[in-house]
Length: 309
Image 1 (tube, rainbow, N blue to C red):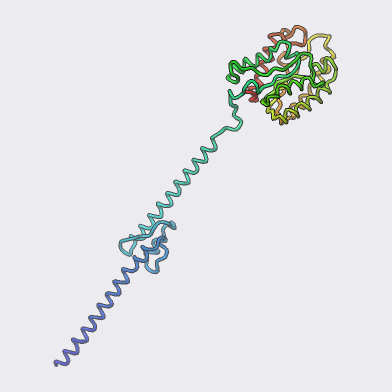
Image 2: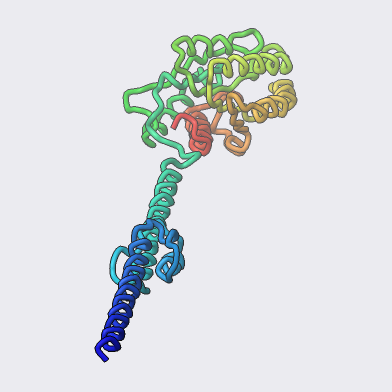
């Protein structure tokens, strides 16, 4: 009997040891799984178990996986939440970049006309006696410019207009060259061709001279020109003058309208003067009232076209 009891006791001890060993291995296996999942920075490198699968189920993340707790959904949930925060932060960054782009877009308005930047020595006035007889047209333009904040109170344009001059014999072009000697001219206000018709009957010569003059202005980087062309002369003794001007007018207008450097703005003074015999005493040159009306009309073109503002 004693040997039988010894036999069973010995075998039971062996079975107990085996049970303890199997239990210990199971515990070790359970603890190792979350350790692997927690160490993977993106929650995708776990070998087995649902922890790694849960981490991958987030939005693909860059945040660390679950770093603690049990090897169940708590670790996975932590990884998903962390990934969600990273995605949200990236979204905020995108909004900030968009706002920056919008601000840059509104930094400057294309085509905006800035006042008060023009100096008097940047504006040349050239032509013949229609301007030079009294210089009243230039004075009225300057008055308007000062009232509108486009010219300093004590500043003046360069008015080189001279009575009796023409385009074709290089007199009016030489007025421009003299004004441009300082290298500052950006804007030109002018007439021309009247004396070419009156004294020479040569409208085509005036047109050719104007073409050459505009090329010189382009080389000098002049930006804009306002070309104001004569009203109809009043009186029977100016019939030949009127005929020449009528022929020259559309040709000179086409030349002006076609320019891009400098940009040229055409002003036909006939609508301004029609019905106003008080604007002239001799039929061609302006009175004080005619000079004011002409100066105001030129100024309106300057404002609309951002010339010397």
